[in-house]
Image (cartoon, rainbow, N blue to C red):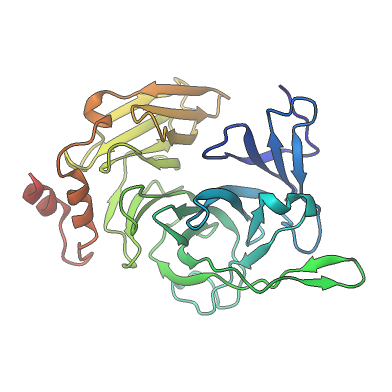
Length: 335
């Protein structure tokens, strides 16, 4: 099946439960929804370019879990225009988002931007364990904790007969971020307050939502880091894709001084732009690099089978004081 679009696609996301559903974001800010099982006409939703839509490239798409309905029928899009928009599959034929935010801090809490300045988004991540909280990364290296709550219902523009969104800032606090653009964020699937980030500064940071400083900083190589992900089967295993064509897999249960495994995705040092651990088959991890190659790797049981008390060890990380805590002490106590 081949689908033609009017612009370059810059972001894609499969529906978590319905693999035939795909959302795509375009370089010009357009949003598309395809249902691949409709072979004759797979396009079932397409946004219009209006004052409510994105004005620049869509950089990240995340499906949102509805706790009450226990389903995914909404998704969020983040753009370099500084907007985060919420869309609902039930109303995609309306061609407009149902809610929206702009990344504009009310006060300069991290010294990176002035209060009231709209920041260009580069990535975002929602946690299924805490669906109302999400984190965003920016072009300036900032990392921010945000709160998602449904804004007031849109008003209608009487002249154009389109809704007028009230954009508010979702930012609640700032973390000590990176020295370069943030490329990927991923929330822990096992602990609601933990998430990781990676950046062009070469750092892979582990954060606690309740602390501004990262509780662990990993630097697997001297190159940029473009992608990162948390294992869906091992709470203490995570990975990062580098600009040198390698993927670095860490097992924090064994330490964090060096990766437990390095995967050479290509031999021409082309960056690994995408990294994803399989949600159902924990031993599988997929990578995509600058040679236009997608590979699926199979990890050994050592890196994919959960260990006794591993979740408890992960929970101890949230109690680390970033000024005094030591991961080595935590791991030694766990063993």
